[in-house]
Image 1 (cartoon, one colour):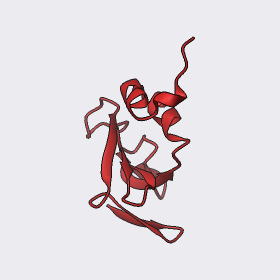
Image 2 (cartoon, rainbow, N blue to C red; image 1 turned 90 degrees about the horizontal axis):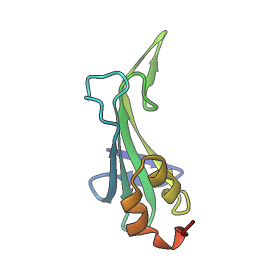
Image 3 (cartoon, rainbow, N blue to C red; image 1 turned 180 degrees about the vertical axis):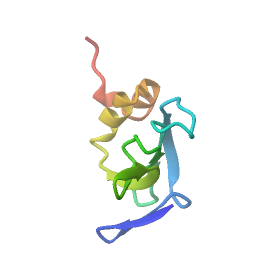
Amino acid sequence: MKKIINGIRYDTEKAEKVAEYWNGLPNNNFGYEQEWLYITKNGNYFVHGEGGPLSSYSIRCGNSTSGGQNIIPITKNEIPRWLEDRELYEKVEELFPETIKDA
């Protein structure tokens, strides 16, 4: 998928996949959601996500919704929280160990 946002082209085929999240639902389920975190050769991060009609990637169609996909830029500072929210703790430790403190 490609998308230009504020003059910057994001392309899943040219970027490196860093992490992946799937909510465990089959792709024919209305709540299905899958996301991939990418980094571009210029160091910009973005999320490519897709999901069913009841996911955060739904598209409004008149009085109903359908599944959809989108690309969302994300800053390096937002990534640890994005990973934590998806319970990708090993990726937080691998990519951002400096953000972790012992209790």
